[in-house]
Length: 504
Ligand SMILES: Cc1cc2nc3c(=O)[nH]c(=O)nc-3n(C[C@H](O)[C@H](O)[C@H](O)COP(=O)(O)OP(=O)(O)OC[C@H]3O[C@@H](n4cnc5c(N)ncnc54)[C@H](O)[C@@H]3O)c2cc1C
Image (cartoon, rainbow, N blue to C red; front, side, top):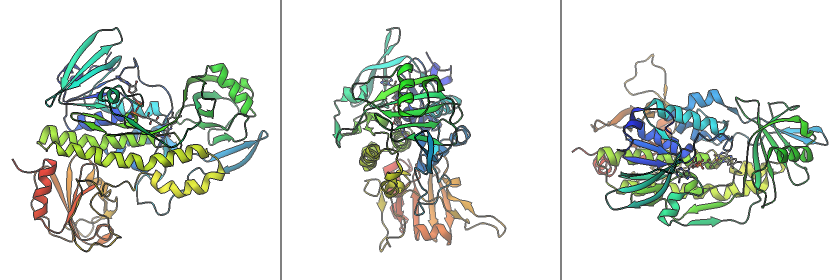
């Protein structure tokens, strides 16, 4: 059952990349690939789009990424900043506080705060963008088996009615969630980290008698804390509360009972229960993210407890890292080694926040945890994620000071005045120039050499950008990370070969 007819849907049996799973990871990757002209098909086992609020918070770096792939305006409209927390005790308001304070040390960004959007809405916006670009999602289609050779991947797809077909394609990406069929088929093991974490239920509910300007919390409920977070763009709240390990998805009556026993509200205050789920959180990382022509991304590759608001975010970042690399290999003859850098870059990045997610999950959303949260708030924005140790990062400048950004770092969104600007021109933001699927060569206090047609050039003299980067030539990758930093133009040619930009 295709979501909507589209040009790519009609020619869906000739695909370059098959994405398994229409969650946020699969949809973000599909948008990035389709905008690069890569023939992409998303298959989704469920018969219809996901309807729960689950992954609510979009971190600052994720908002930058979503901006670049063209969906942030719609997400701004659909969401709101994280509201203040409201503690309740004995039926009375007992203090208002902030779950996450702004980090004064955080890099400059146009999206400095976490942004709340129900996950179903984020997915809807990503899917709308995908369809507008001519992409397709085929619902009711499950990947049931896969085989690969050195030349291609063969996927067996089974429709809800039991019919089967086989599809061959150069690359397949498993964005099929924590119980990934793709990961299983490849025999990739998950390394579980940390100790046991308590089970919880999540539900989208309508509740009378609460304002929608706070994230309400009852920390002392019998059985554990209960939270109700207002869901932007709706009249609902997302309920989360711990339960016993053996509890499955709760029925509406059980949700009412939990609210009546753990808050001051009566069961009758719950006027509707829209969606319910239960989860037993774990912290796990796949031992590798690539197996020849098949990749895994998002929850299929790493599972985070919902303590630091990271799972959906990291999945979108995986997609943004992999999309341009697949595009360069499929369209620009970049060598296959470019694809190896996906695992080299994304596995350490996912690992870096797993332990924080577990720590914050154990801590719960209580004011007493504010010192621990403050310690991690910078990393949780995902703005500092870097690929300095990647084989794809070449820092060739000598005598670097520690204060300047280096190859592998996220390029900063600072203002600059182009070297050829007229006197009355106003300064511009770097991300205005980086936006889009291209590479950019920044020549800072240096003369720009000639570049291949696919690279845009920007010459900058002095100013905050020059202070942040230092002098040199900086090749910025399509995902906004500095690939090469050098003072020697001859280094560029070698780098172009690695990423498919070399002539011929
Ligand atoms: C209570 C809760 C709160 C959370 N809060 C946050 C938060 O604030 N911020 C955050 O970043 N994250 C949060 N998360 C985590 C977030 O929801 C997940 O990390 C996110 O959904 C992962 O996206 P994904 O696309 O990788 O996988 P999924 O969303 O799981 O999507 C995978 C898709 O693949 C499909 N599929 C599976 N197998 C197959 C198959 N064989 N063939 C075809 N399709 C298949 C599934 O039906 C599904 O639609 C939260 C999670 C929970 C439970």
